[in-house]
Image (cartoon, one colour):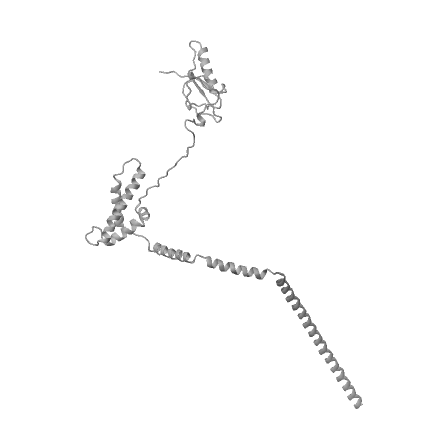
Amino acid sequence: MARAAVESGRGGSKRFCSFKRITVMVCCVNTLAALLVLRSYYSSFFSASWSRVSSDPFSVDQAKRTEESIQIRREAEPVELVKAVRKLTKEFSREAKRGFKLPRSLKQKLVYEILHSLQSVNNTNLTEQRGFAAELWRVEKLEEVKKATHTKSNSSIPYQEAKMLKRALESKWPILMEEIGLWTPADVVNSEHNDKPENEQEPEEIIPGRPLPPECHAEPHTDYDGTAVRWGLTHHKESAADCCQACLDQAKRAKPGQMKCNIWVYCPSEYGCYSPDIYKHKHQECWLKQVKYD
């Protein structure tokens, strides 16, 4: 009984050891398979990337050209001009921060002097005369101020005031005019280009139709009051000559005591003509009128 128990114990341990070995072997096989799968995946990924790079033969050349173009652009950049612009920008900003201010008493003094110089301006061509008078005062005042800055003594203008006025009259004259309320509008010159030949009538002055006889006494753009012998609302003619002839014929046919036409009005424009009365003269309307002269 004891031997059998011992043998059975040995057999169980052998079976346990064999099961452990099988488990270890399976794990090793799985690990090896996983490594092989990872290796194949990474190798395929790098091979695809390399194939894309190698399939584009111009990528390296294009990169080189891009670098060259960037280098050329940097070399062609106007460095000195950029520096000068930045320097001027800083100076202008400092000038703006510093501002331009004159004492109020000095401004009032300048206003009185300018108004005194403008009193000599006549009424003809007022804008031009005012601008000329103000500019003449500025030039004369600037000469006086320059002399005061060169000779500190024997001058009616204090030195500090002369320095401010010199700067104001030389480079800040528009700002000074704005501050003291002096404004002169710029002259606007409108030049009309006329390429029309000489002795040529304006288009609206050309009366269409056959020529008018001398007895018609045609005068464009005129209209008269008076009593209508025949209304243009119902009396149309093809031309001004026909309208004039109708007036002459009516005057000849009129009996004693009847109204006679002595004024005729014809509208040759398609857009209508001016009329001093309530009726609008339309195209080709012929008005026969009688005007009594004193």
